[in-house]
Every structure is written in C-alpha cells, then in structure tokens.
Image (tube, rainbow, N blue to C red; front, side, top):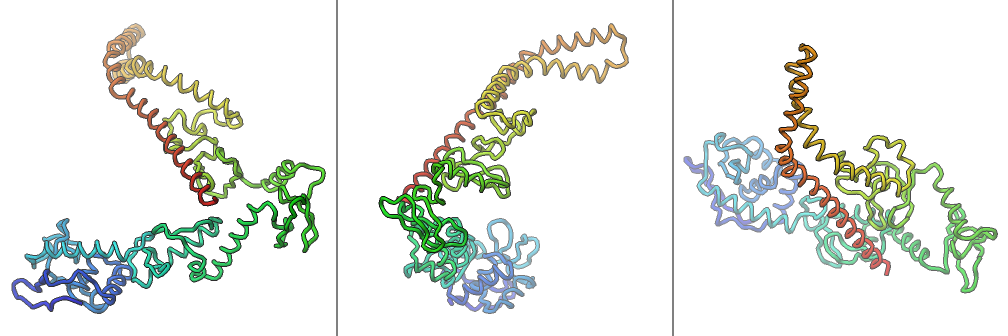
Length: 435
C-alpha cells in the first residue's frame, strides 16, 4: 500500500501529499472498502478516503473516524460538501489547499473501481474471487447474480444458446455444473425436453408420473409406452384418439387445461398465456408482443391514459356493454368516437367554452337576485360576449390544442412502430436460437 504517514501540522492539521498516493488499491484495502460500503453504509468516496488516503487498516478504526472524528480536514467533493462527513464548509475549521486535487484523485480511483470491481447486474463492489470466471477469464458479474440469472433462464426453459449477461461468451455445461448440481440437473432436463419436443420421432409419455420417452418408427403413427402401455399418437404426441382428428383432440386437451384458469391467446403468435397475478399490461415471452389483458389491444405507453381515444375502452363510459363486442365492432366504435372528437373539440373550445365561462361569471356575481328581464339581458350579454371572444379562442386552439392533438397522434404511431420493431427483433432472436 503506497501512502504517506501524515505529519501533524498545528496550523493545517494532517496534510496529505496527493502526488505520492497510488491509484492502485491492493486486496487488503479493497476488502476493507467493500466492508465499509456494504456493511457500514458509507459512500464509496468516504470508504476510499479513510482506507487509501488516511491509511486505516481496520474496519472499526475507519468507521470511528468517518462517524465521530470532527477534527478532520475539509475535502471538497465538488458539491460544496465534504467527502468525509457530507457537510458544508461552515461545519469545518480546518481546510486543505490540496482539497481539489484530493477529490480528483478520489474520482480517478472510484472510476477505476467501477470499471474493474463492479457487478454489471447489481452494481455492488466485489473482490476478484467473488466474480465469475468463465474459461479462466474474469466476467464482471458476481456469483450470486450469475446463479440467479442461470436459475431464471432454466426455470423459463431458455436453455438454448445461453450467454453471459456481461458479454456474448457462450456458457458451457461445466459452468452450470460448477454453480449447482441441482441447477445442472434441471438444465439437462430442459435440454432433453427441448430435444424431444422438436424431434418428430420421439415423445414423452402423456401419463402422469410416467417419465418414459416413446420412440416412433418412420412409418408408425401410433406407439405404446414400454412402461405403462398407453398408446400415443405420433402427430400430436397425446393419447391415441382413433375417433378424433389431432386438432380436435388438442383443442379438447387445451379446453380441459384452461378450465378455471385465466388465459388468453397472444394476439400476435397465438400462444396460450395464463395470467396468475399482476397488472393488465402483458408481454408474450415468445414473441415479446405487448397487449392489454382487458381489451386485447396493442399496448402503448399512453394506452391507459384517459385522454387517449385509442386507449383502453375499460376507461370509457359504457364499457360493460362493450365488453363482449367483437374486435371489428370495437374498432368501428373507436373510429366514430375519434371522428366526433375531432369535429366537436373545435366547436366546444371555440364557441361553447367562452360563452359558458362568461355566463358562469355573470351568474355568480349578478344573475341570482335580478328580475326576469334583467336575467334575459344578462344571458344575451353572455352569449354575445362569448361570440366576441371566438377569434381569441380560435388562435388559442390553433396555437396550443391543435399541435397537442397532432402530437398525440404522431406519438401513438411512433409507439406502434417501436413495438413492431421490438416484435420483429424478438422473433429473429428466437429463430436464431432455435436454428
């Protein structure tokens, strides 16, 4: 560790010579810095200053210095706050002329640590031996995050072409085995399921608790399980159905599975999706298509906005009556509402709004306690005043509201293009992985 012993200067306190401080942190210092940040809750700047600049070698001494030592020298961190205590200059009586240089040195060290010691997933600092090493090369992901990443991918059956989250390095079987034997067993099982699913001459026995694999000969349409003797159809890989077509049999199996389950088909790829909990914004795991669970429409960032005429009809009046409408009928209804909105908005804003505003003002101040003819005159005055304000409201509508409406329409179609691009990218990635 390359630091200088600090000499007591009665006027200036402890003086740190920045030019003599190394930018490299050794293993002992690194472990102490990590303990200070993760166990004690100090910032990375505070931890490095106490360990690397001040030279404390124990967690207790460094923590006491950062918490209780009020005699420290003020070190600016660029925000008129001290690196050590996060307080301003007014709380200090000792200053260092090299404060700015010290902070720049601190900044260099912190940037180096973020580059070389920070997990790319959880953004925590770790020692080198706590990172994953694949094929004897260090990857910037900690062991815990890497294990959770593998577990999630395997549980979701994404075992084809697994790559490191930090880079494009292909994860090998031995890398998974080194993490957990249980995880590796699930991984192998998923691989077998995938291979059997795409192999036309193999199928899992559909009998519950029977894990036997059935093999079909080239010209054989029905085969029997060697273990439980049940007959299986080669085309649909379900129990033999001599009086039904494969499509009818699969539909029956699907209907039985869907009973008492909240399911829908993905509007894009038609895969069955089950909703267990969560919000109504759904994303298909296969094609990455996003849609609304309530109305089935494509999801956009303003789908649930009340002002959006193309948004979710569940937020519109009369949704209960529209709930069972067909998609075409729903689109026609929305189109009519949108046309009416375009026609009526200028009329409401330009003509009716000023008349109502002036009438409300007159009613509040003068109308209630007047005779009938005076009330009639006041209403006429309100109407004429509203007509007189029409040129002003036209200008306001053209300058403010019309661009807003056009902007919303443009934003809606840009959002649709973005979702379409995301869908195409997801499909391309899926076909590449299964090629």
